[in-house]
Image 1: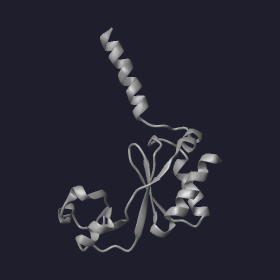
Image 2: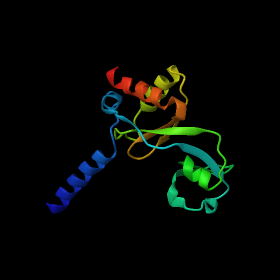
Image 3: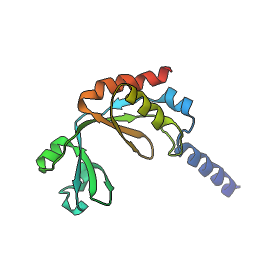
Length: 148
């Protein structure tokens, strides 16, 4: 009996943790949040070149180099080169990594407003980086997706 209860509970938790897959629900529940700060994309040959790894937001290993994303103030402090200053928007709905159409929906809405976006899908939320000067317009555009 205990094993059966534990199995049911773990199945329930696994389903809840996997996130929402239904696009209609995702769009209805989506709350874009503009995170404070300015963010930049930099490159290093290895993570060993990063003075304090806990200060970066995330990294991605590519064939050519390691891309790191961090606050502009930290990149400036470390004398790191960058060419794009962005704002970071988090979609606070817990979307599944298997959800179909969410990225297309917000990317198309932003495209229609001539806003470039760089998307990072993390386990719980999607994160969008837009040019700093487009942040307010992007927030308004993303907010309209709830009403469509």
